[in-house]
Image 1 (cartoon, rainbow, N blue to C red):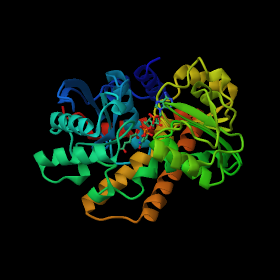
Image 2: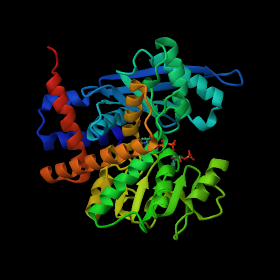
Image 3: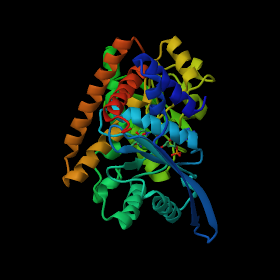
Image 4: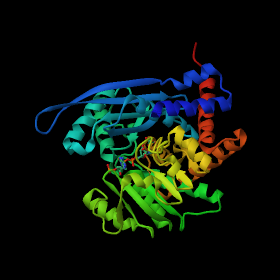
Length: 411
Ligand SMILES: NC(=O)C1=CN([C@@H]2O[C@H](COP(=O)(O)OP(=O)(O)OC[C@H]3O[C@@H](n4cnc5c(N)ncnc54)[C@H](OP(=O)(O)O)[C@@H]3O)[C@@H](O)[C@H]2O)C=CC1
Ligand SMILES: O=C(O)CCC(=O)C(=O)O
């Protein structure tokens, strides 16, 4: 099942649980606006290269639309649509005054030089600048993009609209980025994990973790888990995977990836087939890379008792069903990885106030938001007798439905 079909399915199940009117259900599902633009740039060798960029603005009932921009070869309209919709429910679960959006460009950032990436980002921004904005749609980093990408968007956008730091979040600190934003998604994943494990009388200390993806989310989550006494027994990136049953030395691995850019040739662990990462022996599995990686092909072989969805849409509905029958507890993406957008919200607030918070304050507030959302999801699970994914979806969808009804349709 593709990402959009899976996301629509989860939304519809939640709408049924809530007893939403079918016309309201239909209106919530249709995106507010879908943008598709051609981005042609001169490459460093003088030849031309054309790419397709997308921005899907799913819903703005609760506030400006919010969500990352992804640079990846597999970016396609259905996936961006699904990710935009997930942002709508995610911001509502976290109770942020935002709607949802997502963007992307179908390209392999590893094949582009820094100056080619800059040109591509500026052309994309030129094409969409009238449709984003501080109170309209606020992009942020996602897979394949980072603080530098946000700096180029900010600069290009500001040429048209005047200096506007709050038009993007996840910026470099020197341009108004928030302390703590870079680590926020990984830290939020860890707060979410702690909240879940505590329900089962467990903690991070001495628990065994496997993480797929060692980029922004995966590397920060691994670092913080290691600092809290957890054992990271396996991690992977696109080039391969490493394992150590006694726990990988994460600071050493971070030093290695900083120097080489990959997990390859790391001396402190054994290499393994990256396809085995998801079915590796561990207590907690944290997918932090692509969508749809847990599916009917591998779900029956998963050894973890808990899955924390650091990535967006890592579990397809068929896998959800198989895993649920096995008794595996899944903490869904729209809650588990909401730490990033929550600190993006703090960044936007700081930019609008023209004020900067201490990192301790950012992290303290993040923990408060993550803890509150966890208990609100649990309450929905109790009310509707459902799993955590449906608890989170029904919490988010209900908040957006209420805002939509209150605003009305201005007939
Ligand atoms: N950044 C954020 O704030 C947020 C991100 N997310 C989600 O988290 C996930 C990861 O995002 P982020 O960390 O920002 O992205 P990054 O681009 O920083 O990192 C992605 C990581 O995934 C690895 N990867 C890519 N393909 C594969 C594969 N087939 N098998 C194993 N590893 C793979 C990459 O390897 P390599 O480096 O070798 O290419 C890299 O380590 C995405 O689903 C994103 O939507 C969710 C909320 C917020
Ligand atoms: O920080 C943000 O605004 C969005 C992050 C994001 O894209 C996500 O949560 O999937």
